[in-house]
Length: 306
Image (cartoon, rainbow, N blue to C red; front, side):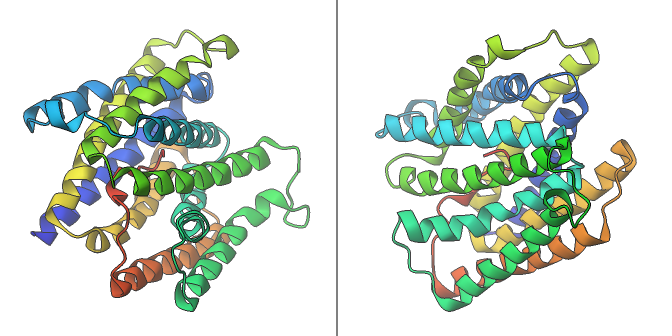
């Protein structure tokens, strides 16, 4: 184990995923979410395929013992990705990132519900604090007292971001089951394959001919997403999951910087207060799981898009 290399790879992957999200956001005004999912998934596949060939895992890494498990993981993950991409077109990038931090909190709850994992008082309390943080972030978008219009696009974006987080948590539960039978490389590859196929089903519902700039952004999102996935997966070869997991929250720094300099988005004090609670709760959960010796269920396959 070389933890510093693992941490460096994780930070690079998180930065690349933030750039990918910015590409999707920049094209979101004209390009529908289903079409964005198609480009993100299709153009990631050659990168992942070449990576597997380089590692000599094409023959063994793509064999599966639970094909229906991969289908359901793909369906849930694709839904999470589509809702997340839709939210990017309606909300500031830092806000979508903050709401997305609900995913690991919900994973703890779903693990208890569906996997029978025992959740003790300390972790349950941390989840509760984190969810309070999520409510604080959502408050201005979802309540009349907070000044929100219940029929506004921003309110819809908040629901989509929260739905994306919930589906990402469900996808993580499926991943925890899949890693018991199949390799991580297969999980990564077949998710991209499934997402590409499922996104084509949205073709009759408003796909557009992208401009040259939008086409570059969409193809770049796929290529960058594929590269980021490789860095993310590689990070876990050099360091324990509990060591690199807290660096997920570096995405907020990247999101704030990208949002400010590219999209002229300034995070509110309420959002920063809420996300501080979420991050504190998330780090405590990671620390507690490490103390309890719990496996994080191939966390490397859980990307910000599902």
